[in-house]
Length: 171
Image (cartoon, rainbow, N blue to C red; front, side, top):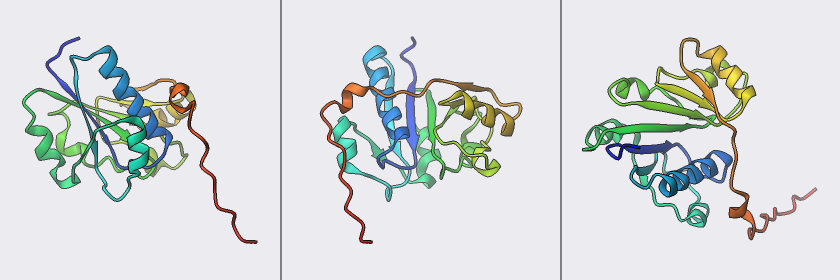
């Protein structure tokens, strides 16, 4: 694999969730199997963060305000690929300002039948994490390259993690 590019993993929230776990584990796998590819994890909304969750993965990240995103990615010396991890609340309008100057792949992590949430601005590819989600994304994004991968997490990361206990709600 060429070492002359960098992957920018971008996401709206570092709260506890499956999309975040998949992004963290994907980043770790790329680091392990393709150490010559540079990576950065970028958080685009500083209000949605669980520091303990991030520490549990040993992940380093940077916060980048959305209005500085375009200027920052154009300033990288090496070519970059934006890997945008789309959540239900994510808006893909910013892609219009960077695509096609910068390659963009959107990984869709949320399922809904609502067209507003499934429409993605033009990009190189939309990756869905299930076949069912893939069918919906294809329907709402005709003409876009849509592919799917099986969503999975490394269960060994959770072997020694106790479940969070919820406070009892009053009747």
